[in-house]
Image (cartoon, rainbow, N blue to C red):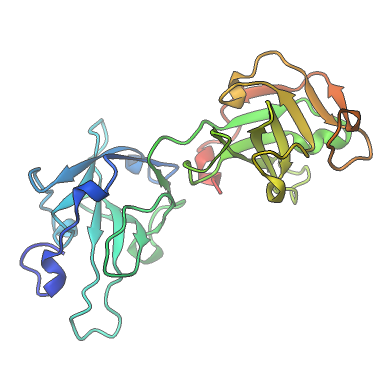
Length: 271
């Protein structure tokens, strides 16, 4: 809450040292929200619009200026000293001078850093869908996998980064499978991850740093699947759900990895 508010919480301080220097907002239904945000402190000029008047002024974030109107990330602390039966909940919010688009509520007396991962809609559910993800670094790029046939055709489709971009396995990102529409649409359990010298596709419940059991793999040290060179993929032999040994797999020709997705605003589909 800003200076002059009636609550005793109006002067609470957020320590800039406890906050990351920058944040990346991606996948928001409102395009003006997406972008890089830089930490601001009390020495910076606070945006003095009515919408943000009660946000804390000791630390907030401002979007790096571009052709879009400027957006901010600020903290609004719950006013629990008034006689309201339902006082406002403490929350970080993403807003412009006119609208509060997205929120990340929190509880407790201590203000945590802005939530990493998926946020919620603001304005009582009137925010523009979908809500974005907020992370310390840009999310890994999504990509398409195609060329699988027969029983392995279930692996075709898009592979999207998890909404929490900080979640890694063996220092590489994890991707969620989004099946081709109409093809095994109930099989959203697959993940692509890197372990034991190969990018693997396996069950989301079986991911472990030393796990080799999977449904397909491609030997490569690439830090991202789109950087995989012309290396053959291996898929489980006919009749096998998963495999562990070389004898459980067979070479599959024609599998390709392409950057991007086939649908617009693919980040809307982040898990």
